[in-house]
Length: 219
Image (cartoon, rainbow, N blue to C red; front, side, top):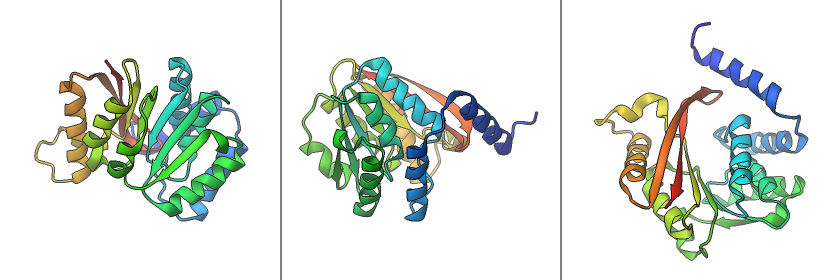
């Protein structure tokens, strides 16, 4: 089979059919995002399950999410922390936060989630530290700001997940003027050079095209 975006998407669909159960609450959250006209940039279903498993594997009970959008990934995270766990999620757009709040409540996990509205650079300094896992999926231009706060608000052993690091392979271009590519390159450089992190990264192909994710531990 030829390696094409269509083939990647078909393989993603197959894997989701094999590994994920039907989920009306998540389907409803996606439908609410579409109805509200939110951009279709939420994590893919398989990536949502990966986040869920990372929380459970690490035993995380306090999770920080930077970039809520319509709450799709937040539902995956909130389910994973359990009834005693908590998710703080930061969203710059109040309209997006309203969509997320409705979907979280409808999914039965609203009481586990604290949505903070505002720019990450403004909200993060107001938070109390001690997060066990941090998921970063917001404006790529601010990746280094978010990573710095992930280290400050975490502790040794905190898991950090930085999404969308593939950028269709453009990350190899030192001359790129795309601010998203530049921000991604700077974030990856920080993960490699900052002694607070021990990190790796994986390229992915699938429903979201040629992309990837970086995983780090705060040390």
